[in-house]
Image (tube, rainbow, N blue to C red):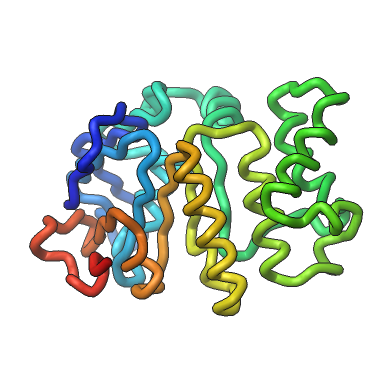
Length: 241
C-alpha cells in the first residue's frame, strides 16, 4: 500500500477489516484483513480486477455496508456499531457519494436534485436554493438548473450528481466508477473538477478501472482477492506520474 507523504490528520481508518457474506455455497470472504489510512485532503484511487472487493471496500467507507469484523472510523466517527438510522444521518452530513450511472431523480429538475440532500439534514429551506446554485456554478452548469436530467448530456448529469454529493459540504467524497459511463472529454472535465476539490481540501476516494486515469492520481491502492497490495506489488503503470 502507498502511504501518505503528508502530515495531515487521518480522516479514514480501516483496521483489520474482514467481510464475509453468507451464500448458498457457503461463506464468501470478500475482504481479508484490510488496513487502510487516508488523510484529510488526499486523492486516492482504488483499483483492481472485477470481483476483487473494491466496491465492498468503498461500502465500508460510506457505511453502506458493515464489516464482519474489524474497525471502521471515518470523519471522526466509529461506524462499526452504529444503527442504520444513525449511519444514514452521519453519511448525509459527512460523506458524498457519486455513482457511475448518476442516479439523479428523473422527475426532479437539476436544481431540485442538488437541493434534495439538504432537506434530510435540516438545512433551512431559504438557504437550499442559494446553496444549490452555488454548487451548479462550481460545476459550471447554472444554465441547466431548471432542466430535467433527460434534457442534459451524460457528462452534465454526472457533474450535477457531483454538485448533489457536495450539497452538505462533506469531509469525504467517494466515487464508484464516476467516469466509467462517460466519453473521454466528459471524463476529463469530471476528473479536473475532482482535482480542484482536492486542492480546496476535500478528501476523495475513487474506484476506477481506467488505468490511465489512475496513473494521474497521487495515491493508488490496489485490491486483489480481498487484500490491499503492498506498494512493490502494484502495477507500476498505475503509479506513473
